[in-house]
Amino acid sequence: MAKDVTTIPYKIYLTEDEMPKNWYNVRADMTKKPAPLLNPGTLQPMTAEELEGVFCKELVEQELDDTTPFIEIPQEIRDFYRMYRPSPLVRAYCLEEKLDTPAKIYYKFEGNNTSGSHKLNSAIAQAYYAKKQGLKGVTTETGAGQWGTALSMACAYFGLDLKVFMVKVSYEQKPFRREVMRTYGASVTPSPSLETNIGRAINEKFPGTTGSLGCAISEAVEVATSTEGYRYVLGSVLAQVLLHQSVIGLETKAALDKYGITPDIIIGCAGGGSNLGGLIAPFAGEMLRGEKDYKIIAVEPASCPSLTRGKYVYDFCDTGMVCPLAKMYTLGSGFIPSANHAGGLRFHGMSSIVSELYDQGYIDAVSYEQTEVFEAAEMFARCEGILPAPESSHAIKCALDEALKCKETGEEKTIVFGLTGTGYFDLKAYEQFNDGKMTDYIPTDEEIAAGLAGVPQFPGNEI
Image 1: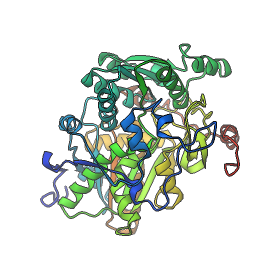
Image 2: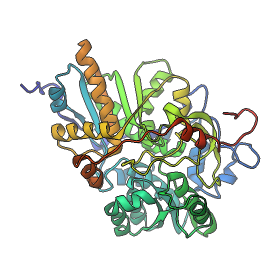
Image 3: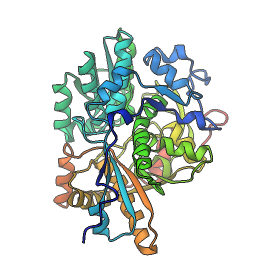
Image 4: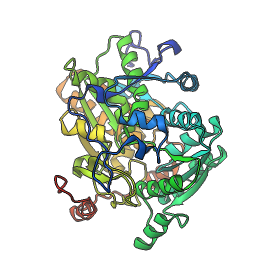
């Protein structure tokens, strides 16, 4: 028998007036701040002037601001958000019934826009600041393609040129995502390419490589810094991106508060940290201020396990070693995930904000192999009617496990997870799974060690 839905609706919607007017900067509530970005040449904190050679000026200001708790969302960005925000918080009644669990499961659905994911929240912000600065265009990288798709939409909206370097394995596996980017006016190049000095060097050093986000970042930065009127923009990892994505968590909390719901467990998939960081921001803020306590779980793929198997040190954000050093949980900038890995979440490191919260014990982390992740995706799709992205499905798998623990103990915990996007451009991966051809790969200790061997060595940064 279906559960009573008269008290809590299937979908909790906020009105446009209830949409956040400010982003929340969780760093403001952190007593121990994330370590600053370092200049790899001098090992000194990056200055605004140095960063402005790569990033837009106002985005640099956001990147370096770790004291202002709330930063106003410009009206132009809020107007764009209204096309698809506020996004719904959904009670997974059918999934609860399937699991026969006393747990209450909610998911924040970020796939209700053409880009299919949460990435649009930051893409439109970064494109806005680039246009405001009078730039001609921007460059970027993309892995599974959600970020590239979102940014192509945002750049089309503001009339900016866009050059995307797409991880080669995804470029080949996800041709339809690539074509959406091109339809919105972006040029898309498989990375590593032969168009840049760094790309040619990586191809020479690793013949036949399927690429990584670290490779693509290097190429995008090279083109941005060598082309007048261009800057580089990034879809995850950086503090500015997590700031923009805080709109997810702020809406989630507002929707829960609207019905007097307090979550026990908050779950997000974790690649570079943008979705997770955005979802948990206001809840982590309450924990940092000593007001509430939650169990926060970061879920990553076993094939790219930066939190669960990486080291917390300064490392390059890119394979070409041209970007600043960031202190983060990392597998080494030279680590390249297995080509059989079907989704995104393939960055070698984790956001400095997420890494610091994890190091301080505010966040737990788990990893899963991809076949069990797709099994969870299948169950969710059949129960809830949404085909989830492989990335989101990592969070789904963890939510299922936590709900089944509640079944064993009889505890009525409230679980909230981030459904970052849809999987309609990931049908090749679903085909592999449905045909029984999907395989798992977990890097060996030796492979992890080889990646970490490239971490820069200086006093205080030894592995």
